[in-house]
Image (cartoon, rainbow, N blue to C red; front, side, top):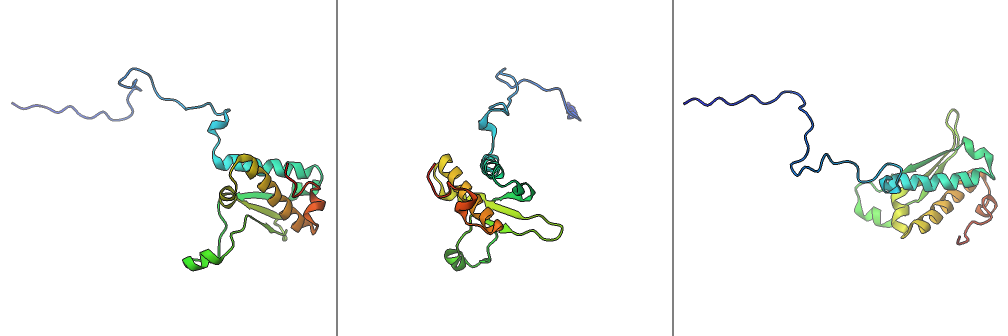
Length: 152
């Protein structure tokens, strides 16, 4: 007795309900709900809020690029002993060059590690942005933002 094996379907078949009859799975939360924002997106929002707050007082900051990177590049390489002695920066600043605007960088992971709550993180991000803007403008942080260093 020769039993023929039916060929496997080629191409996409019709969408089927799952075996329990509950339908296809969808997103856990709609996109407008904060639950769907990633940690990186939420951190970027904190930086943007801080920048917008400073731009009201310093309109020339609209020409500066504000960038969020996960971690800084270190000069430690593969040497674990060098990692322990090297300070990890929370942010950095690069002055404008011909054809490139000034850039201020905030490093997300080191900031997240040093802050316990969202409010503490927002305060730390603002302090980093103020310090880097002050360095870029050649001013003191207190003159860039009079509330610098004060708990909000």
